[in-house]
Length: 100
Picture 1 (spheres, one colour):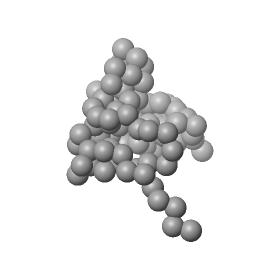
Picture 2 (cartoon, rainbow, N blue to C red):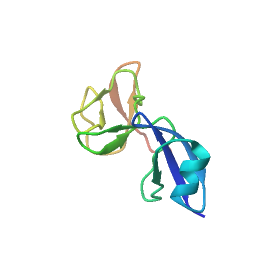
Picture 3 (cartoon, rainbow, N blue to C red):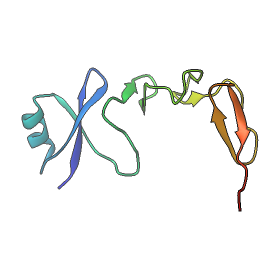
């Protein structure tokens, strides 16, 4: 049985399983439902930028990051090549040390 994203005001408010879109609409009471695409990872709370027709998580991964014009969260400093993780306290990338 397929899953459907339940949409209200361009936000995913629920995900339900139903035999058809019509049943998903009837169960949810919402006029917009979208068949869940398992290749994409949308979650409850995600919102849609209608100009780009793109879904994104409105919560930044870190407080210092900002949302760019393509709805992608960007750090204040570009990530260097290699294995790095973000350090929010110092707002910098820290190289991951191999402990083997």
